[in-house]
Amino acid sequence: FSGHELDWLDALVGSVFEPACGVGAACDAEVGEDFDFATRRALRKERAVLRAMARVDGPPDAPRVGAAGEPVWPAGWVGSISHAEPYSVAVVARANFARSLGVDIEAERPVSQAFAERVCSASELGALRTLFADGQLGHGAAVIFSVKEAVYKLRFPLSGEAWSLRRAEIRLNEGDFMATFPEAVAPFEQGFQLEGKGRRQGGVILAGTWLATGARGTP
Image (cartoon, rainbow, N blue to C red; front, side, top):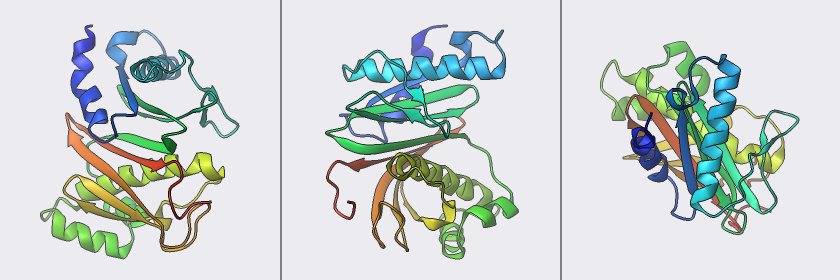
């Protein structure tokens, strides 16, 4: 295995975050497929995180695991991790740049109509019908799901609370997205908007978002 085999994924993750963020990727081919699923994922996660940290001169430490299974980052740092077999990706930044980050990677495959209706609001489904051709709604809903997962991962460290993915309303626009909270959802005020970017390439969907330190509309 050569590290250059992941250049495309590193570039993909980097394309949805600011240059101040460090990004990293890892895959099963480099950690070996003789391990069980959980061990492979843990090894990939560690490699992705260490690569991301190295790119922004961060500490060579993997995050601890919190009570809810969330990553707990070293003091002065924020980050996010995601997995989609056989890949893991990580993004990190100094806390004086971002208050929180959210990244999500998914295999690019359509979701069912039932799943789409569970994740998406009626207005989101209506907007998707204008963006995606007939028969492609499941692909569009998969993008919405990935975006909402990235938003969820950004918000969870700020509140410590689980929440329904339907509490954020997503609008897609040529590789960018806007997440709006129609109701107040701690720590965000009613109507708070969060920007981000999404990509589809190499058989994966990648979504990323960040909350700048000191952003308006947050405590």
